[in-house]
Structures are given as structure tokens and as C-alpha cells.
Length: 313
Image (cartoon, helix red, strand yellow):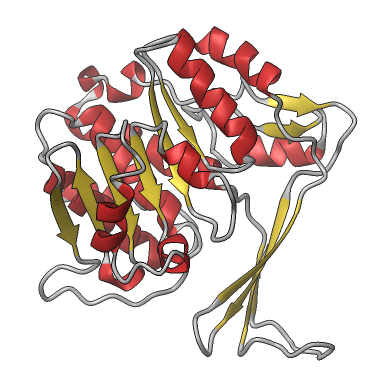
């Protein structure tokens, strides 16, 4: 649930919201929603014979309430009719009816977002993940949010041991969460958030990436978003850095909703790596993802966010 308020309220005060929205959230679900749009748009643009939507099968692997809970139907339905996303690998908690929830207070005065999270669902265990990974098999790409780093690290190491051709990407997002650098050390692609980088006293995206290249030694690509300054990436082992601003020359934008901008950027990079590994250079991949996120912040939600950017290709 996201409510907009004129200014952030003080403790024990009362304030009327100017807008209220209830929508499905979650980093990976958000990324998947945008990714499936990109796959469909690209297929439509080139004709169905082009085959991106059919060659790439997105899966959501997440803990959800009971399969017959109304909340679960709402979550699955939020991806739209005929969704490309396969939900069969989700783990449904039969004794739970409510999903993980986030309550977001968005200040119109400052643009700040304050989040309160609640989750009563038992987290995924390593044994549950192993069962799912064995079904998905090798030659896959697994993207991890970076939640519960101890379990996530076990998951990544299992993939490395059992499925050597699988690629792994991970988010290093939440400041103060221990174990995230251990995940980065095992991943092929790492996404760093500005808030995490600043918590480590990095002054810029590129400074963060160059410092972290000594940690993420298995990675081929490190990326860091930096809000209105766009994003930077560092290719390894070449150590070639690329930075792309959030806006192009003579481009003006009006920021409406920044919730999910980072998830949208990740969707753009994953799409570029999966569908344009050979024909786009690194700068074009990052520029595409940045422009995708820039389009997203100019609207509420994610509907149709990729269509405008893909038209320019």
C-alpha cells in the first residue's frame, strides 16, 4: 500500500493522505513484470517468429500464502492475463492467508519514501530451493534479491556446485544488512543501490564499483544506480567503466513515482544480457536500462513502461 501525503507526519499526529494505491510489490515480482513486458514488446515489434518470449521462460520462485487464498489470486493476477511468468515453482504456505506487505509513505514536500514492512510467511529454506533448482535445471539464470543472505549464499553455492552453466545475479541493496558482500563475491552480475553504497561512504557509483571489484571477484559485470545521476557499470576483468545519465540531451522529465525504479533498471539489464548480449555493447545496455527506469519514474506503476523505450531502438 502506498499513500501520498503533503509532508511526512510527526509522531502521534494525524494527517490526511492525498492519494492511496494498493498494488503488488516485491523486488523480483516487479522486475519480472517489466521483463515480461519487454519480451512481449520485442516479440511484437519483430514479429512472433523472432522468438524472445518463447525462448525465455521467466519463473517466480517465492513464498506465497496458500494457493487458494484471495491474496495469492490477486498477486498472480497482477501479472495480467496470459502472463509469461511461470508460478509453478512458487512455495505456497498452506497455513497462511496473508502475503508479505509493505506500507509506503511518500512525502510530496521532499519526495522521500518511508517504508514499513511486515512478513509473517516462513522464509524459503535451502532444501526447498534445492528442490526447485533441480526442476529448473542447468543453462538457467537465477536472480536473487539479497534477502536472508545466509540462506541465499547456500542457494548460490548449490547452483555453482550442481549447475556450473547457470548464471547468477544478485542485488546488494539494503544498508546495514550483513552478508551482502558475501553474495556479491559469488555472483556473475551484481546490482548495488545508491543507499547501500552511501552507507559504505562511497561518494559516487564508479567509486563503489571500483572498490567492490576486489570483492566480487567472480563477476563479469557490476552496476550501481545513482538516482537522478543515472547509473554506472564496471566490466570485469577489463575494468572498463561506463556511466549513463538519467536523462538524455534536451530531455526533461516530471517525476511521479520512484517506487520500483531500481527493479525496472534490473529488468532492463537482464533483458539486454539475455536478448542482446552480442549486438549491444555495454554502454547501450546500461543506457537502455537507465532510460527504462527514467520512463518508469514518470508514471504510477509499471503498465507499458517498456513500450516507449523499445520504440526508439
